[in-house]
Image 1 (cartoon, rainbow, N blue to C red):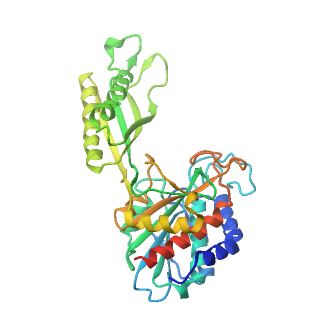
Image 2 (image 1 turned 30 degrees about the horizontal axis):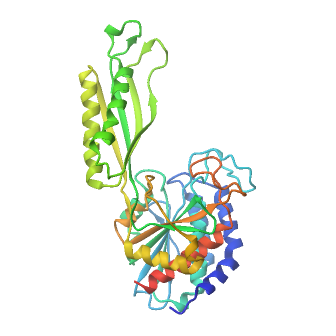
Length: 398
């Protein structure tokens, strides 16, 4: 490869302000999962302005475009961006604050989309100097089951051409701006939604012998289910079972007919994941029955675990070290959060890495999925250049 990192850095610097404006537009106009209609139109407009011919309507609102270098059929590297926002009321006081009350880009998908567009601008400038094809994938619905990635795959996003390797970049407020993070192999957990409906017999709270207490049954189930992790999971296999919602009853002196509980189950082993589903079901149903009631268990199977291909990640890391210096490349810990990019990692060799966006002075260290989440926009120049440079290195080694 005859392209140097200095060439990429110069282009990233030239395009950074334009990409910041794109990010701000997307941030100010967020759309919920699988409703990214205007965002998709905006992305397609930007791609056409670059001279590309985007394919729209993939898996509903997804967009795909190709950047063809020399000998385009020789190899393909895919770059992925997610476009959806979250149902959160933004608390930031910025000029590009969300104009859609109750909807906010609180997970950085505005940045991801803008960075892939920025990387595309750089790669288009260099397309006569590299061999192969860059496939741009802008997907809907990362935040909601069944995950836009799974639907994009079903709709052929990984075909014609099929990527040899794939990259996903995600903001990380806990890593300082100017740094990036990588991890080989297993990185993020699977995520399943657990819904329990406990049914009893309602009545006056002063007559406990005349009721089947759904509140009491629910309490026993929540406590007992903790043993799924503490006494059934291999201690060497990270596992999380948490319940975040309990609803039952309307008054202090009335036992309700039913109680609804909702939670999340996370794991890093697919065999154990589905074994745990059986144990959750067996324990919940058994306790409810033993106390005279019943429990309907619904486990909504979500994203699988995310695994970073070793070779693809090593190539990416070496490229990053050359681009920003070894001292600015950090190791990532296992992360029990989930990401639907995981679906891609089970289909093609892939690397999902982190872009540092944290800056205490600029107050951009709040976690994702919070009303005050924001990024240090100085990270965007690095984000677009880094993604383009890693993509070029992946092409060279595919």
